[in-house]
Amino acid sequence: MTSEIIDSKDLKSDPVFGQLSFDGHEQIVFCNDEDTGLKAIIGIHNTTLGPALGGTRMWQYKTEWEALNDVLRLSRGMTYKSAITGLNLGGGKAVIIGDAKAQKNDALMRKFGEFVNSLGGKYITAEDVGMETRDMDIIREVTTSVTGISESKGGSGNPSPVTAYGVYMGMKAAAKYKFGSDKLEGKKILVQGVGHVGETLVKHITDEGAQVILNDINEARLEELSKKYSANVVLGNDIYGLDLDIYAPCALGATVNDTSIAQLQAKVIAGAANNQLANEVKHGKMLQEKGIAYAPDFLINAGGIINVYAEVAGYNKEESLKRTENIYNTTLEIFDLAEKENITTHRAAFNIAQARIDARKKEQNS
Ligand code: NAD
Image (cartoon, rainbow, N blue to C red; front, side, top):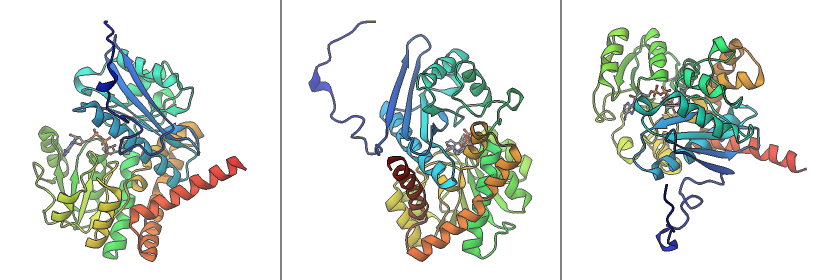
């Protein structure tokens, strides 16, 4: 390896703290290992309520800026998700830059685990896109700061089915608010992204008799699941103008934006993806003005964190499901509060979460 002197005129100003997505984050850790090729970023947004727990995403980011921006947005989202869910956890998240199918191996996972371990419990990892329960088991070999490990190894297993159950609860609550009934029978529902969470959600809503339309970039998966659930399929990105009752984003974030809102026919948005609103303030407001009931993502996709928190707090699956079911009630409360205060649902949920963090901080400082 050769070291070169870097000319300060080549450095862009404020590359981290000046990022648009930087929001008072406590710590950002850049992890690099030449032997395994690991390039990862751990974002710790806030630890007021407890250790920063959040999954690791492995994704082929086009640029490092994109990866940094993602980890900043995702870790911040975890702070509010755990706060509104009433968990004693802070917000953190990690991203590994690379193709999970081609570049993930046990040595890379172990090395990443060592970086997590070096934070001494301040950050606890779990699964996210591109990760499997098996990866958490490998990380567990080098650190206790990991959740979502196999049930056979004493963990809570794959959190995705519990996440899907919570999204289903949030979707039913949103339907009750918007359509006057939480029955999804006959409702036209587009599920965008039929991966771990999306598929289980499809199962819940088809069992209830919804008319489900599937969308994914993985055509083989679409073919398999359309047969399995007798569901229709739509290919490509031209999906928002479809005649729909409910849009369920279950792929990646920022799909609720200027373009999609302008076309959207759905009356409800309720899905699993994190950071669905490209711009929380602007797009939250646009949805409110268009009369689209938006179930805040960080509220209704909390089933997974509830499930992995069981490993930290020591409760069982039954308790995880009971707590997840309560997402139905919280979602209804948020819709009512937003209407009463004439604010967006995102803002209503955010305000409650922030108030909990502020109260704890006050206690800690007194
Ligand atoms: P996954 O990787 O299993 O599934 C994602 C699916 O989306 C894949 O099938 C992929 O092909 C598809 N996809 C990717 N880009 C797409 C695009 N542009 N259009 C259509 N489909 C596309 O991930 P997952 O675990 O099911 O998580 C889905 C979303 O829910 C993610 O945003 C994740 O952060 C969020 N989430 C997951 C959990 C969990 O417990 N797994 C918890 C909370 C939030």
